[in-house]
Image 1 (cartoon, rainbow, N blue to C red):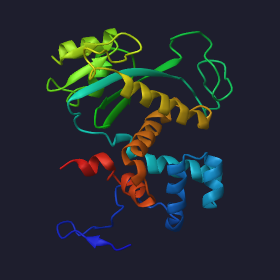
Image 2 (cartoon, rainbow, N blue to C red):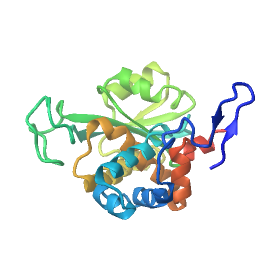
Image 3 (spheres, rainbow, N blue to C red):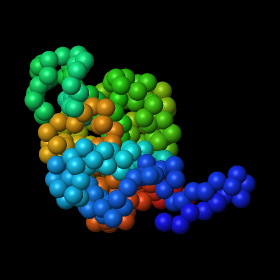
Length: 257
């Protein structure tokens, strides 16, 4: 890999400097690692495919996902569908200091319905499929504003299910909001206003996450970025595209002028 020298400071650098892949070794195995990401295989299978130790495969996974976690569209266009999903809190991999009794990975909540064990995930999509998402600290207007401010604007029309927090965000941001009763299907009078788009994304996300038998909550943003990238790339998901995403040139960064 060629190195370059800055004429001003005389320091040398290459294409990976200050990226998550900087100083990562065994570049000849990166293609196998990205193919494992595209297929969504387990860490154990990725380790066997790449010929590396399990812990190395896990570390590589999150090095490759670090930049993708922040690869989101700057703005959404036209009609936007926004809704929350809930994923069970998990401390997978943590061996001490748990705030509760441990349970099997991918287990069930101790309480029925929504509770503090359920982590809110906000997803917003426009009609072209551009997607932004976020792990919310709390299901509140402030948390939603932190995720959607500037991304969804008064130029958009927001479809939601009438949740107090998202409606309060839309009202404060002066965004036209269309509250749709559950399950958010379109009506003959307004066929363009519905939640089918975002609800289908929730279903695909949860089904895809199931193969990992529980995801540590601290790593959830990386997994959201992973799924968001696969959806954005579609049939164009290749090793080269995934490596570009890993160094900060994901599908949404490339689309930004």
